[in-house]
Length: 591
Image (cartoon, rainbow, N blue to C red):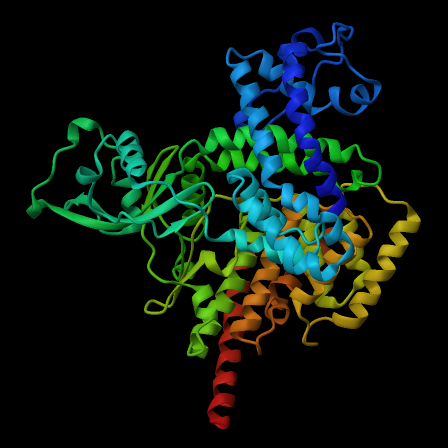
């Protein structure tokens, strides 16, 4: 990793100089129609391979190395896109100066990297915090990449992932004057007309947007149930002609959270992805580093982040989550209800409660509260994975709110979600089943099906052997006090050691489960997440086995699992209730 950073950021200056010339040469070397398409969604098409002869006037002279490693890759498509735009020269200079800024920003980390390479103590105590600070000041795209990297211990070291996890908080904020202007433009109403009150200080801020608490004005004739308000409010926005104040006797207010996108964040992210994706493409061409598939991962990552800058995407995710959890069985699990959707402003119902992160740090927490958070958190994870196939992509305790008065959980910040394919879901559930049965070889086969790389039989046998030894040491199956976080952390370390590349969806699903298990160990150490998941996992294993035996399509198995899932969850909840009763009797006897 030290070598990668050292090489990549030294190349930033070279990139900045070359891209100016590449933009000039692009008209002669590439067909603009085959350049970069649909940048807003992060999709890139390959450049036309029918290149004109290289120029020899000294401006765009090509070298053999550059033809092999650079000109035929992402930089060519980038240059084509730049040259085909009327504002190409401006964009070229923006990338030039942005590259220089990033070079000087990361310069301390670059020049200290040789010391970090040879000194583990210096690396952990000085270099990793320095790198995290540099990323924190480098803009939304790099911050999001750092947050993503913190969930990938299969690629990066565990210490680096722990340091990058600090990027989840303390994001910069923008001025209230910009918020007023943006809200008025999107809603067609001033803040004073649309809201009875609007706090000037944000209650939270991320790399994409920041959140305010406010009171939305509502006519009293509108329904009082927040879950049905989305059908009552004038969505997507009221017309300016209705921007008059309602008399106090005929209006009421609704507590809401107002998310406002940071200024120019979309343009800044797009600019940074020009650089980041070129660097990732270059890394893939370095011998010995191709197994990382950084180019493909960066393509997926940039597409997700580009969509996340449009806040209507988060609103649609919330609508879908609310639909999935609308049955009476899930009334104690909630999500904010989107009320007004637009690209840069999202108004949603305000969810009461405290962060589970605060509950974890409270030594006076109730055992009943801890049990509810852990068991229902596990329930919603397996519902999203097995039944809904639509997963919140960031289930850390800071995004889960607990209402102790209603005994309810709510998930916030739904900008990033994961919708695994049928194969991905089947392989992840198969891995969890292997954990429950204590079968290291079966778990290794599931992980190898995750992989985007081809492995020889010798590599497969080596990986399978290490997995079996890991399971023999720390994972003997249900009712053997297995720590899911410890096992999965060990699995991801073996994935890194054996250069097994896994997709982003796999990593997200596994890291969510690691977060859940870590939360359970802190809140309720006597509860075992793997034992609690025995009922749904055994059901899925039974139905899948019958389906394979009868040679039925896999979709048939999924339909049966979804049909009986509500009954299985009631069975699990009954078992969780018995566990709590036994635990309370034990506590009473000791007290």
